[in-house]
Image (cartoon, rainbow over the protein chains, first blue to last red):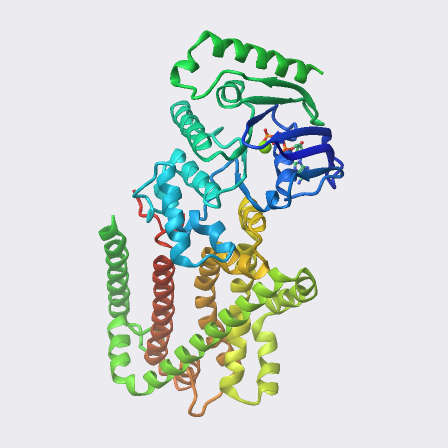
Amino acid sequence: MRLVGVRGVSKVFANGVEALANVSLEVQAGEFLSVLGPSGCGKSTLLRLIAGLAEPTTGTIDWSDDSGRADLGFVFQEPTLMPWATALANVALPLKLRGMAKSEREARAAEALDNVGLKGFERVWPRELSGGMKMRVSLARALVVQPRLLLMDEPFAALDEITRHRLNDDLLELWQASGVTIVFVTHSVFESVFLSQRIVVMSARPGRVSAELAVTTPYPRSTAFRTSAEYAAWCRQASSRLGEAMAA
Amino acid sequence: MTGAKVIAPIVLGVLMLALWEGIVRAAGIEPYILPGPILVAKTLVADWGTLEPSLLVTVRITLEALAAAVAIGGLLAILFSLSRWIELSLFPYAIILQVTPIVAIAPLIIVWANNVELSLLICAWLVAFFPILSNTILGLRSVDPNLLDLFRLYGAGRWRTLVDLRLPAALPYFLGGLRISGGLALIGAVVAEFVAGTGGNASGLAWRILESGYQLKIPRMFAALVLISATGIVIYLLLTWLSHLLLRRWHESALPES
Ligand SMILES: Nc1ncnc2c1ncn2[C@@H]1O[C@H](COP(=O)(O)OP(=O)(O)OP(=O)(O)O)[C@@H](O)[C@H]1O
Ligand SMILES: [Mg+2]
């Protein structure tokens, strides 16, 4: 079942930069979709358009039903936490903005923190957290509203490899447990192959969809998958698609 | 480190005072040219009866001006951040007020206000409010654009965004402006009183300095000067402490030194 469709979307900014040109793609309910592309090809712009934070110049974003857009989670490239608020208050923010009572939203935020492996860190301030833990708080904040669609913009790009692998594992677990739909933007071939069922490859500016690749390896994908020949083959495929996209 | 931070300036201060006293005595300088620190201290005690009311007047004007600067500067900054049009039309006038020397407009204000204490208050406020205004505006604008998007995503209106995002983000900037304004309010109160040059019963420390000059009571002049400096230092320390108290949990400026 389709959750949201991007139809013939272009985006030209006020300064004349053409970020996206005629992009079309479908997001199926419950899937894990990665958007893979070189830096500056308009990946962040695409996510912002889907989230409704910016309007397309031409084309439309079609939601299969109206409640879709209201149920969004967004994880940015940086943790984007409020430094003046505790981890718990940061996670509870979306609920607060929606007018939920304090006791209920704090209970839910505590549960969300627990789900991302941060039980006991409720009263900790962002500056006391490591980069990986900050990203976990950010993930908890996106999940606390129990979104239908989770948009993630290169969330782990700034982390070291060990932390990134652990977060990838945990993200897959959360995805399988919750049934949320994920659109995951990355410029890492390895990350996109490990995580997703489907990879949309974008070409350099102006961004267009240049290829699509279905990664059919079943879940759960373990650490063993990362070192398998199968994984290497997928990566080779995705890599060559990306190479073609950048040459085009 | 903390010990040295306190002890080093105290040792230097004591040495300088001793040197000052030594020179005054050795050269036999008359007290009406330059009194030694011991004589200044004695005068401070002996003349406390006249100096204390003046100190209270100056402190009161300073604090009232600072409070007015916080209220009006802060409110204007919020108003500017809410409406681009209000900012475009009013900000140039705020700059004009800021760049006009207070001694040049103080006589006018004194004539218009027709009340010495009120005119001193207006002058001190004029000098003090700009750093709070400009710093708070800067702070209200220095918000992480991703956080703004997040607020938008979850349907927060202007008011919610102001209270939960812009104001906390602006707090460190506001406190920085407040520390500058604290000193400026005192300077404004003293300078305005010099210009006003009034006697009467509501006279502050600046008037005591003028009066002592006319009467060649130079030690008392120094005593009044000491009180002004001490007031400035106390205000600065209090505001620094307040700033630390409000920011220590989260802001980089309040991190303990490692
Ligand atoms: N608000 C804006 N105004 C003008 N140009 C913009 C704006 N936002 C993005 N751009 C431009 O649009 C292009 C695409 O930007 P975008 O951030 O979407 O790329 P990206 O694929 O996310 O890049 P990265 O991998 O570096 O994050 C870039 O050339 C960028 O400079
Ligand atoms: Mg980006």
